[in-house]
Length: 290
Image (cartoon, rainbow, N blue to C red; front, side, top):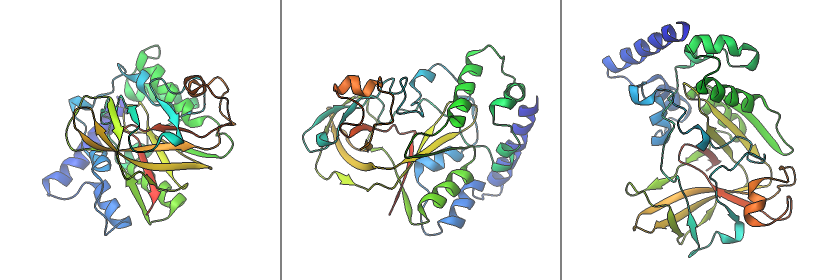
């Protein structure tokens, strides 16, 4: 009942903004931090009020990009490749370039901050959400919290954010205000998984904050940045003619990853020997300096 009451507060908060033809609170906050930069669509979508289509679902939870990219369980459907493959003409498979399975949106910061988010408060969290302790939903929620509380590895800065304002603040704290969001983009809806890398691959540098959307009843992102990691903006052409652009991350130092990580098996290499790359899903928020 507690969480339902908080949702009512959130809905009223959003309804007031809508009735006055005003911006949503997150949009107002964005303008206060970046007054001359329009809010990117993939961020604006996270501010929309909850609907029946955004209800917490676990059907596709196994597709969740694990926060532990270096762990044994990471990379459930991730295709890894070498940095030398990022050149025009290379063919690649991207199963989820624009597919969105996680429709959770942010709660207003004051609401999100009033809800516990820690493993020692997990029974209270389940009560807030009216979730049965032995349900699939509970298992997925616990995994998200465990990922957030897990220790970072060498060369990684890691944290979780539970509100839009925290997402913005943490990224500005790490990179400054002269930053941009790199989205996955496509000129049309497509179901193809087969793409060819086009001309104009851009190395955006080593500084980045990558925020993975987790499975939770409201939007929670696990953000991290790595040393010795390059971010690329990659133009693509789909097998159906779709023109797209995707974000790829190349980890130059994988020595701290689990030696049994699937990436090493896919590429037939050992940890710490060569840079390993992968594309990011459209649900991942990537911040880089301008």
